[in-house]
Structures are given as structure tokens and as C-alpha cells.
Length: 304
View 1 (cartoon, rainbow, N blue to C red):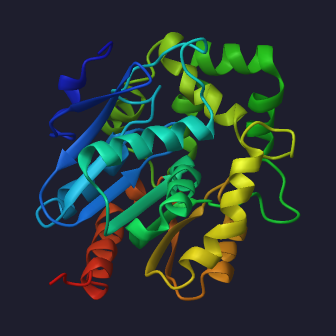
View 2 (view 1 turned 90 degrees about the vertical axis):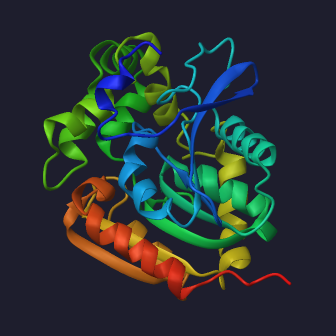
């Protein structure tokens, strides 16, 4: 790796595993034994974001946390060698979980872009998904009347500015350590979150994720996102679901929280008024306990 992960091992004490997808090394955490729990990060985080939840659940579950290609400890290929689109993300996840043998009884935990990636996988593999944990994310197109926040619009639309700002000056990953937390992050946590994104080459995914946000029908990932939007509530309207929401989130704000509750009235929903987008940084003890309690309250059916 092109950054010193060893300096973060006290916070991230997990063994690294790799699986080859499309000719690239796809990094993932694989900790514990028991029921499958798959956690999917967003942009600009990586599996480091889930470290406390992994520690909480791995004594009783098998926890899988991949780093999307271009993120974390996974390879960071150029555009000629990898398509940084939703379709590729879902296909990578499908290949990894098939390789690992996760064929049934999966609990899916999603945050940020992990929501659309994970729930698109879930729509395609609905028989495998038994429980859902939702953390400041979306599995549908923007709610009616919403607009993309201006900061993301600038990055998405103005290409020369976006390329220099995000890949040259790391404004997306770097600024997120200040803007995405309500309570503020410890210096070592900030360093851990941005560590993989330490060069122009290694920041490609942080830019491409923003540029792949599906807003208009002409956008490359719009059709796939709309398919998920159309099917997700029908397929998972009775699935046990826990929604934990940091209310100080300038992207996935209160309107998105309301949309989850509207589409999934069966969900157990918790609002955290003192947390931001990085809810697992601002309220890790409370959220990890809620997740553990949720799994206990919604046990998987025992097979004869």
C-alpha cells in the first residue's frame, strides 16, 4: 500500500484480505464467525469507518467489510482500467460475496454511497437479505423537490475545478473530517479516515463517486438507481430494519430520514440530534449498542 496502515493499527486492528475483481485487488475485512453481517462504506470513507461496529459484532457474527475499488486498501486504478460506476460497484460486491459463500441470511449495514450499492445488490439478491441497518444514506433517487447541495454540484459539474480541488488539494476527503462530524474528530481518527487518499492518483474514487451521483435520466447510473428505487420498498417492506440517523447532515438530511420512515413504516428509527453524517464517529457507543440489540430482537430463523 502507498500509505502506512501500520500507524493506524491501534484503531484498526484487523487482518487484511484481498480478492481479485476485474484484475484489481479488492480489500476486505473478514472478522469473526456466525451469521453474516456485511457493511458497506460510502465516499470518502473506507472500512476504517466501521471499526467500532466490527469490534462490537465480530464476537458473535462473521463481519465482512470491503473497501470499494479506489478506496481504502483496495487498488486505485485509472479510468482506462476500471469503470467507476454503480454497476461495477454492485458487480464487485456480488463477486466477493459469492466467493466467500454468503448465500443466505445476510444482515446488510449501509452508509452514504454504500446504501445505493448495497440496496441495489439487495434488490438483485432479495432472498439472501434478512436484516437491514441504515445509516445516513439513500436507496432511492433524490426526494421530490430536493436539490444537490451546492458543494457537490460544483464538484460534479465543473470538471477542471473539481479535478484540481478533489485530486490535487483533497478538499473532499479532507473537508469531510470537519464537515461530516458534529462533535469533532480526534486527530488520529482524522488521519485514519484520510490516510488512503494521500495523492492525486489515490483520490480518483473520491471524485468519481460524486460525478456518478444519479440525478438526471441521462446520467450513466440513473437507470440502475431508478430500478432500485422502484423495487426496494416492495421487496423489503417487511424486512426487519434499523435506521439510525445523524440529523446534522447537509446531504442526507432530515428529508431523507423522513423518506426512509415513509417507505418503511416497520423500521425501528432513531434520530441523533447531536450527530452528523459520520454518525459512527459521533455516536459510536450508542449506535453500536442499538445494532447489537436489533440483531438480538430479530433473530434469524433456525434451520433444521
